[in-house]
Image (cartoon, rainbow, N blue to C red; front, side, top):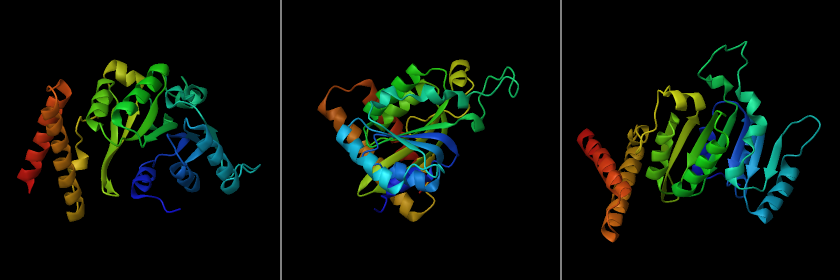
Length: 261
């Protein structure tokens, strides 16, 4: 089956070789299967809470990516809540030895061995999932690749609050919908000691920098849609702090875009 532009964009942003990749809310497993084909990690974990879906996915994986003695493919299927990911079972891969890095306060990029991908859910639910994962594993460094379907502002605020390190971001349009894709790193000691150097913007930075006419149209369409959304929310109820901050922040983006035309 042909991959959607959204899933292909997510796969393209994996880049760094990982030991374990967790494809969360994986649905039919198309993204994880693509990562298996690309050999993006030594082990791909498919995670979803819907049991019948996971049973069907297991059968398909056994057919197309058989687990053999040569370990051509390594994968596992987990029918669990994303908030309970057992990343602690593989955490030793993240810890540099005292011999290699004595008294080190910061984990090197090469030591980040796990990537958690969460896509296809709203930013409000994604926020809860990410918070649960890091609160359950406060001493484990891990990368996240996130693609919320809405409530991006709320999610980004939480990432900034926990001092996540910004790695990359992308804005795409797929099937008439806009998506932000955000890659970040949770690094416990950096969060505790204020060592994070690249912080997460509440509205994004790189996503507004169009390099082509086509991408400029995507950017303009997205800022218009986002501002309209928050302005409508402000009319429907008493202005809350999140809506007010969002309107101010996105209005500043719109102003900068208009001045750069």
